[in-house]
Image 1 (cartoon, rainbow, N blue to C red):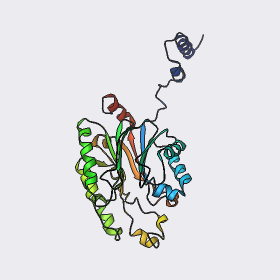
Image 2: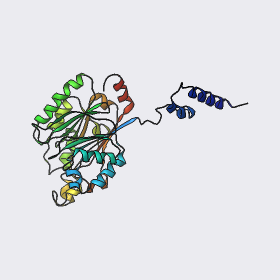
Image 3: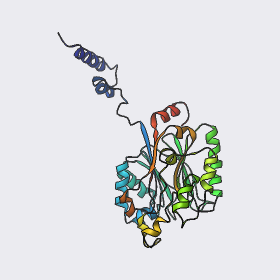
Image 4: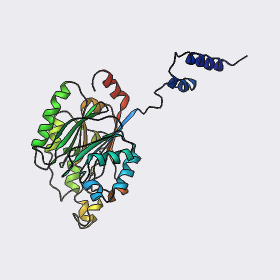
Length: 300
């Protein structure tokens, strides 16, 4: 007698050949798996200031290799000096992203790459020192920023643009180089960053609108995002002086719904970063299945 499992398989094959089941499902059915079993359930985002386009364009290959190793879904970059949008698309392709946009092609551009299509909603330079990108990808609005110290109107403009999105229950992430600190790091800063002035205004205004510091939520010990030893001897004469300048000014902030479904958040202090940029990359992860439900319900 033919085993029961083979009867099921042959029956499934017969239905398949009759056109009742899409071919793409066949292998999954035989293996007892759903069609989405291999689909990753994590949305991974990397944010990184890459120091004048990856150490003045001297460490592009190393930077690309590190980003590729992260297998992120979205990458936000600051200080893409000397890069064009076409050039960024080529680099992004090397780390597995088909889609890439840049704010501008002069000065200190920010950029965004993704393994899903990107809709550019706004490129804003006027009234800003560097400017910002507002894009939508992965069902989420991303605001890629590079604030200028003391120019607080920059964050006000962005928060005003975000307000109606939150009312519409859209999902929003603000990420980039804030050039400002968090009150959550106050004790560390007082004890360690004695050669730094502390300015909490940018972060305070973002948090006042309900946004959540994803790194602090998951890794409250992560207090340093710059500088790295690459700054010696130009900006710090030695490691002792550098240690007195270390602080966290690079952030990923998520709206409360996204933050609730975040899985992890940290800052990579990998040694190889020391030769690529003066900033260390911020890495966060979200539950993609929760985000997908929001997309189906109209949240993205």
